[in-house]
Image (cartoon, rainbow, N blue to C red; front, side, top):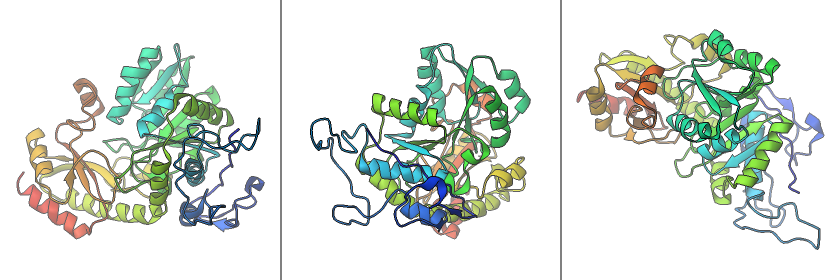
Length: 412
């Protein structure tokens, strides 16, 4: 049977006595440790065979038994792999969770989670969300007989009205993709928990460095590890983290049964990326906020959707549940689709491409790119317009990025 360690409690701004937490043996890295330390060391120690400091890539499908009916800690890499376990334990630790599981893509993580539910169950989903999640829910999960309702979860009364006796799950994004709306994690968890409804939150935009939903009572955290956790646009992956024992067992069973796990090479790359997560997130945050303020003053910009701006209608909530705002935000160009197209087609440093969270800056048009799989009426109902542009601000010099926008706006 696969062995697992429980993860440590950790917070960005205050230390915990990790060595004493649940009596876990966390090799030599016990004591008082903060996020930056854990991002480098959690779940990892020098390899027992040759003392490799970096977690080796166990590029093997199978492991030798020690004898008849005497299995090793890992027997087959779909069921468990040492490189994967190091990443799973690291991500769980950073989110403050007991159980972490990683998958071949972010959508594989979501598919595995939603496989928990079946015919007759009801799931409530925020109406402003990633287009791929919308497609999965409406074209795959709904076909299993699961009822899906898209609700504006900023309105807690609307959430209360949407709950049925058969409601089993509430799926959240905060900030939302692409409109950067915020959902009150604690308030939603407080509504769901007494009713036995599972809450799950996509935390990709913030990473655990800036937001930790489990601390607010959320049951499951999801990541596209492709984005900020990896940070280098060279691998795809996903993760699910929970403190709930029953959910942890269900997720592991489905990961193994469905074969949705991440491969060892991909796990190695994400582990490598996480080591600089704290440093990168600080720079992403600083650059994005400066550009958002610059755009807010530009005569060809209608509105900037960035929760770090005082003009954002939920700025107070952002300061309450986030320790930073990340590097991704949206804005609306004055005009319509033609003006947005001219802008995104004329940037030089901002690459026109889908995805986010890498060291390089990206720009995209949600209506025709990341959210094109949503029906037009669903996009319009959620507030996604044809003049909306989303940017993922990278780690380039911020003055060069602003200069790139300056020259591109001249073409609008």
